[in-house]
Length: 309
Image (tube, rainbow, N blue to C red; front, side, top):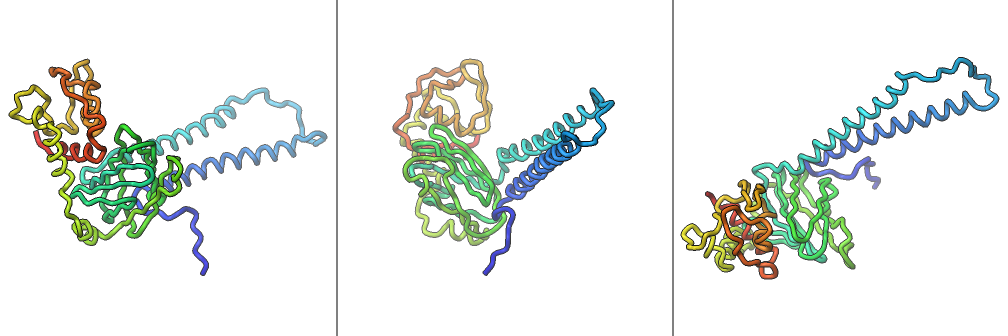
């Protein structure tokens, strides 16, 4: 059976349509410019070829309006394309407040994913149709890249830091997940799938066979077992920063800088505590580098996210 011809591959996210429209506009613009230049080359090559009867007398030395037109018109068109692309790109990092978080740890050669209720998946991600999904990602070893062609999203996953990207699926079904960064011998095998389900079906799937505590609950247990509560709890005798409601808060540092606390700030504070010392506090916290796994760090961060000042 003959399949219908598609100019572009399947698209199954809100961002995919905008990305395709931008690409087609850029293709049309560059194609028009290339065609125009090619036609002018052919016309002038024929008209003014050696031995042609074309009148070459009184040739203008300079026409400013012609030069300005062929310089400024393409410039303005490409600046418009640039502004359009910059706006769409910035939307990838303006994450909706109601986005469902999913935590991703990449390692050679698999994707380890965890939902907020503690349910885990390997190289497979189930998400609800029409619900914004935010991925908080890090790597356990080398640089990977989370790539879903049907969603038109690709984000590098880097060891030692967190990266994020979000999407809203618009079509139910199964879609390919790849690693788009060469990551070692079995790079080609590091693939999986995204399963988009109806919201009611997803809610039922999320609860099935899950005996794990929620990631925030596990983070609270880790927060206590690693001794964090001994210094950062409200009644502690140790003078340490208050972590309640930390994410999104402005933090003033000892060296005069200020920053907005995010996942990377908390990660660095655990593993590199002397990097960004909070103003008014001594750098007495020990480093937990090599003691806390990436999964445990993500759980602790999610516990802190849920605290309130």
